[in-house]
Length: 204
Image (tube, rainbow, N blue to C red; front, side, top):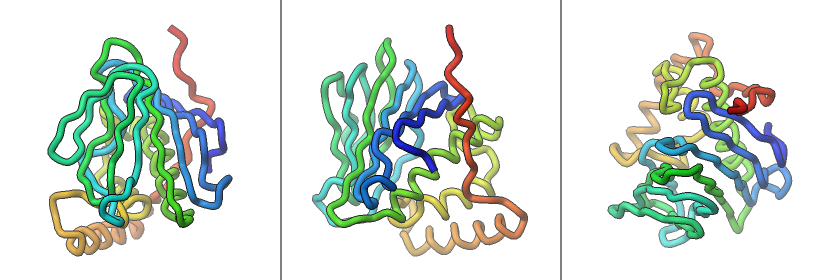
């Protein structure tokens, strides 16, 4: 598991992530990470939503430097630093993409009043796994997991419930992901992969 200050590099998307606040240090109340995103790249994640109390904020993206674009609900937002994008529970959204000419620095913040250590721990492991598989050449240029069985297992174990895709009822998603994930485990796949912290952004 990541520690505060750990930095990981994704060679597929050329992005860096720095763990600012990890759930292990606050009883599972908060996870905050800084992303450094080159022009024309984006944070990982297809459109999705986080199940929870309507109207409350599920996560925020603070634009510290650069210009970001993302979709929240039916709106396409373009925000230039300094600015912040709040995403509420049950609101379909994408993560920010860099639409500026310079590096995008965006801080992703998730906070809860009641501790949710299991949820935050799984999200942390999801980010680590995406980077690990990219480091191993097992992710696409956009950072998506290439192998469908690996992708389903990782999403099922590390993201699904309370995070869902917007295209199918939650009950169907739970059943479909659970079934394919069980097959992946039988074939020897593992949901979590540990990244190599020694792999750094190349010096230009």
